[in-house]
Image (tube, rainbow, N blue to C red; front, side, top):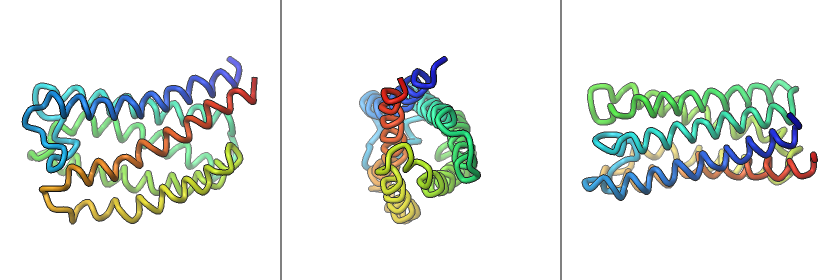
Length: 199
């Protein structure tokens, strides 16, 4: 398979995963009558009759992260920071699948499992956006600054989530988690565009 085709497929899957998880959240909110997106967290959508929608959204987002890792590995296969970054992308993908499978416990006895997975995700994403930026500049110079900005926003706003009042934590969580979608969407888009220069 030509590299340009791999870039195109992986870039498209990365973008698709991000759009699907947003759609899953919106559909879940619409169908889950008791869900208030301002006060109820994203994970609460995984509880009940329509919980599978949120789970599938996270699973497909995980696929998007994995596809991005494959595409970027096809593009560049050397460099310690780079390889570690790609491994982190895969770990984030695995982590998202675990969150999807365990988030039905949110607010219940298994809640600690979910919370620990979320903390791991938070740490992995911060390290990823900092570490991968040094080589992403060769894909598109803008991506280095972009990744640093995402890392800075994540570092500032993500830890505050635990301090947000219950009446607002759903809205705040959605704002913060948008970074988990914005970053791979932008990188996947530039990977997809790069396929044109390789053909």
